[in-house]
Picture 1: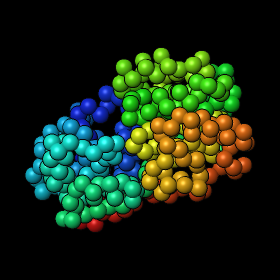
Picture 2: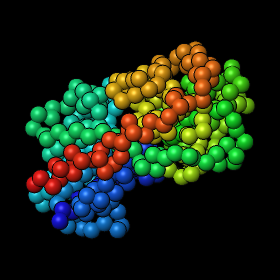
Picture 3: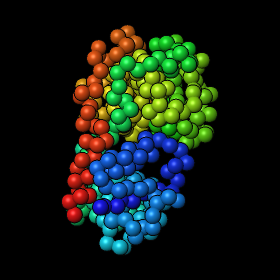
Picture 4: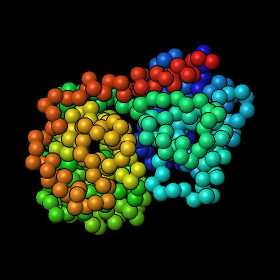
Length: 321
């Protein structure tokens, strides 16, 4: 039976975001398919006990993990999660190219990600595995309770969950909502304390900062299911959190990106992530419409994103040899 070790860069779990949740979703999908998989750490086995390595991310420090896992005849598979906001410096690009060259295969979750990756890296000698983003089964639900509204006393609110940092760009939403009475809820772990303090300093009384909600908890699912608007305007791309909200039938306001067009073009409104006036205009337009994108939930449309199904091409690759 195959054994797979899943690794990531050393500082990944200082703050838990979408990437860290994705790792656990993949682990569960692999184990469910009969592939024994472990996350690198105190409870994992010695590296020589594993047949394959899947490494998440290309963030600095990844080379330490990949170098330690070299040798032994095991295949190394890269799950890059790479999206440049600005072109990388020559020095950083050299580091990344050396890192990428250490892998035998690369996983892409969207055509947009693959196009960007190929602009910078020669992967002609690597196997390419195409999957779709993994969306937890916890969001495929009907009849979600109103525990979030009851807990926080909020009605007709917009919500933005996720890591708080400059690249995620919460300030644009805060500035757009400052001239509105509509409540905006921001919930997430703080990766950049200075940026968080700037967000708090600029926020009006209608902007509510709440603690990060446990992923997939009743509180988290309720917060999305009962919002009037899900908003996410990062400078890279919204990612799985937007798909989670789409499954629950939320009205979506997202950054204008190739990724959004690929997965959610007919399901959302796209805006320039730094255009405060455009964001404010679309928020007002959204709140003038019914509280859901549609009267029926979109669960059936998104079942291919359930991890057991979404990871099938990778599972087939792992079991083929």
